[in-house]
Image 1 (tube, rainbow, N blue to C red):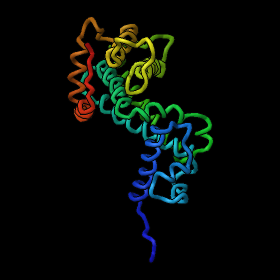
Image 2: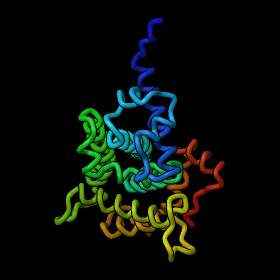
Image 3: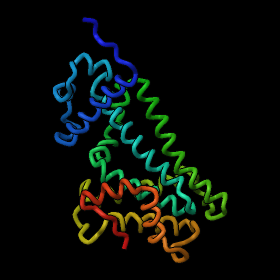
Image 4: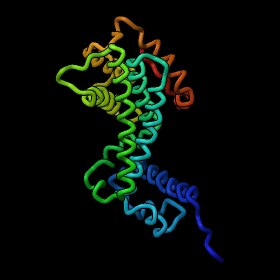
Length: 251
């Protein structure tokens, strides 16, 4: 019997099966305990088949990281396209980062591990190029919002900073807040009484008010506009969060 020749769609589906199984293993055992043998045991494919898709576990980890960035890029793009002022869209984008972290906690915790030099050094050129493209898209979404604010004279770039540094300031504040306060990820000690979405909202507004990015919080009710924007842009994600017993509270 002649083996069935898989088309591109079948090959992508098989590769996705392997990635999905790896994410489950990472959630159960931790990224540091994953081996290719464990991955092979978790999928209905031979070791040779798995290695046809991935050079090794590092290449597989990079594929997991690329999936994480793909999900983030979709959420960020939808936030950026919302019909609100640039500052409102940037706030919405950073709250969408929290949505991603809650719905995909394993990816949120793993993605930084997939960016180590060891992973890069043992991954395929194709997957490295894919990550470069995805990260360029992700950064471009943030930059487009800042450029809109500059064009509309709602924000003046400080002399000592460039657009990339502005992106980093809000991104790092968002990542740190989520990593420290989200119960879906891992809460730190001393966080009693803090609600991650409220503090994420506060941290971003502190930065944006400090940069004099108009309208300032004293000039606009961003809580109300953000709640309305979330319902308009992410109704499916909010419904999924609600089914998990999770609803946002910015008050």
